[in-house]
Image (cartoon, rainbow, N blue to C red; front, side):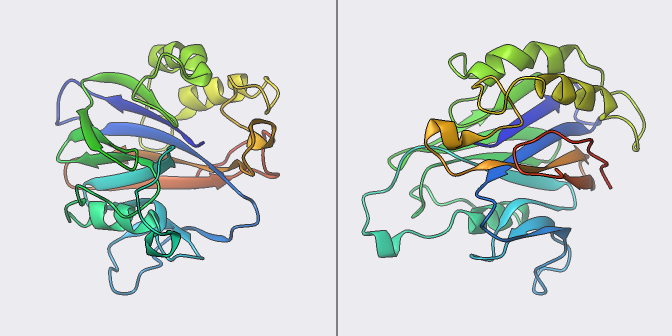
Length: 236
């Protein structure tokens, strides 16, 4: 039940800005932002150590981040593959299969100065282009009006400027994120979350901010001091 905030500018010459908060089972090991794939040395990402794929990855002017979504393909369990490989394929410019052999997902893809959402529910892969503006994605559709955290905070993120320089542009968004964390992490409007109350073993663990141009990406990483609990984030 991760959360992504993305701002698509009017001009493709301006960078796309992203804030991504990862929710995962704290017992599932991961590697922080780094170059973990020797066969693809240009890929920078947060690696899932169990399956070897990525939650978020970037290469040049491409960035992709994966959010879980309900749904499963009609396949035996042993034939269902990890979703993390789709992130790597995406940032390497490889096409996503029309019938992924994975559980459901939302895949945010940025490339060529444009952004889109690929949504897989186990039956159909849908593509949604993101128009200029500020959008939020969680476990349902783009800017979903039935997702409480999107209803509560999309307007606040939309109102916050991201016009700062490369080292500060995310500060207004971080202020909104800190404001949202005044809610209890079990509250369904919260972005820094403890999802166990909703039947999932996941808690918010870390966040990334990214500025993605047509030829290059600047991605930064910060980890919460304790799962599901707000602490100041120092993106580096």
